[in-house]
Image 1 (cartoon, helix red, strand yellow):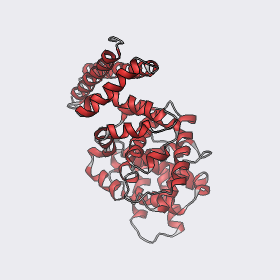
Image 2 (cartoon, one colour):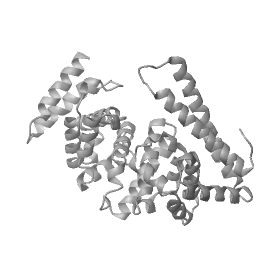
Image 3 (tube, one colour):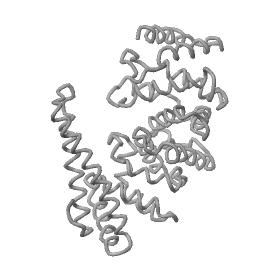
Image 4 (tube, helix red, strand yellow):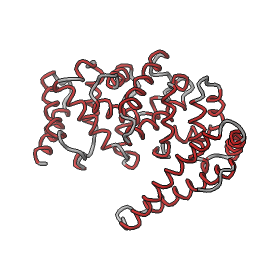
Length: 338
């Protein structure tokens, strides 16, 4: 740990200067390697992350995918991404870190192109995984930008590259599932981006309960649930409607009266037609989440985690809401209780 701390100290010294030469950047890459290589949890001593963001911005904006997949560039970029993502995983509880993330110029063409290049098929797994985490952190600003950060054809390509990584390669990883659900809420919020969501990416709404409710895009989508339901009805493949409707039942307790009446109406229609299998799918998924949350509550209660006041209470509230959502859907669909 002493070596890590010393390396990080050197990294911060280098990054404090302006107009860095290529030799300076090379030294910074070696320093960040020494600071984070082999570390699974970013030390709290890291504190401010503005130097790491400066490092990332430089490399993502100025270096193409050729430099990211090999040599000290690739390894250092992965470690820098990892440090930012892990340090920022709960960044909303840390105003200082949130400020640095907020001031990152996430919508510049160079930065957007650089981030996109990291998730292209064929790149190393860790590079794509932590880049996906960075995209999730920028979701509320990137997909809600006044001017689209990509051209339409680039949006479609980006969505496809993301789906290839998340679904084809690492569908089972909870970290990736959470990031993908966050990104999907961001895309659905945008009138431009939602048109380019690829068919198989919609299924990431199965993990919508992993998304922190404080995300702006999450709140916006639930507040505009009926508008988005109407949008997904107009999609030819039916997957958007299927999975967005399922997400609404996961969060039925958060919907306004109008949205509740609409989703209940749809459930009644589905229960008397070909939609019964989808209703069973939603009930099974929500039931699995109920089981996991109940186990979480039991573990928290047994551990008596006094160092995290309110954690057990919030988990119990989440459990009550999920149970209520499940039972209301089962009642309307005429499928009985669990």
